Image 1 (tube, rainbow, N blue to C red):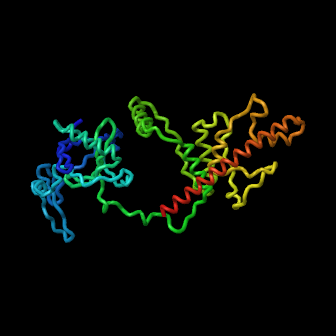
Image 2: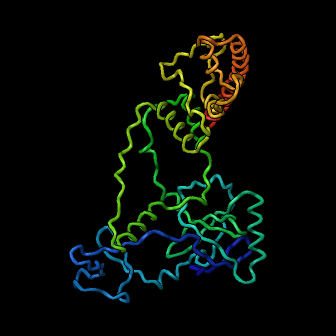
Image 3: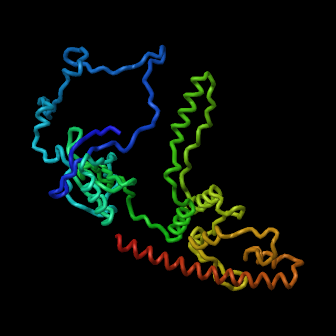
Length: 369
């Protein structure tokens, strides 16, 4: 890989010669602007507005226009002689925990390659940061400006560098934050947690650009003279009216997509808060109400069908319904009661675990506020 900048890392009195190499590359499809009547290419030319003529590159310089319209010319030589200590050095200012870096402040990503003879101090710095769990905040002048950067160990034993925006370049989000006092119920948070757990983690190595693939297929079809088949336009997303209902539908859809139940019915326990906040009634056997929130969702995800097995393999709800049906034997009723008792004990334990988790979340939110 070709280096785009050469200098050294200034780590106290230790100097580590390095080369900066781009860590990313764009695979997006490039389009040209064409004249639609004859496919002629549209080009942009640099024209002097005073002479109305195109200007060659060697006659183009830099200038700053003051508010009153006065133009000050600045030459590349003047810029190169500015007294910048970071002109050829990545000056480390200090070290901070990695979780203190706001991701919105990150700009571009690079790899730092040790120059000849700099392997030992390079590895020392990399291992010291890896052991401490901290990253380095640094400054350097690159591409005509001084910028902040964060250095950190990355894969394959290499140091990575991410250029950062200056703090005054980050806009305040205060004006676009939700206004007013908005409360979120614990039941909604529990169901949101369930949805997050159901969606699971993401294997970044399996992700790919589906839009680019579709564009490639469109271009290939048109080059071969085929008439591409375009899918129907997707309808715009509907406005969320019932948040709880939307969360429940999302959990159900996520489970079906991931095949979590392997044939089990993917349902979510209805929450009393959707019906005005009243508590659910007791079961027919006088047991406690069903567990709510995340515990109930876990219980639902763990259900398995009992086709081909005895009555002891059926869920408590099916056994309760079976006891109502005519023609059931006394033996089946007894088995149903036994299984329902076990399910009730399990529900009580899950409810207690959910309440403890909710209490911890409340405490964490109070501390954060």
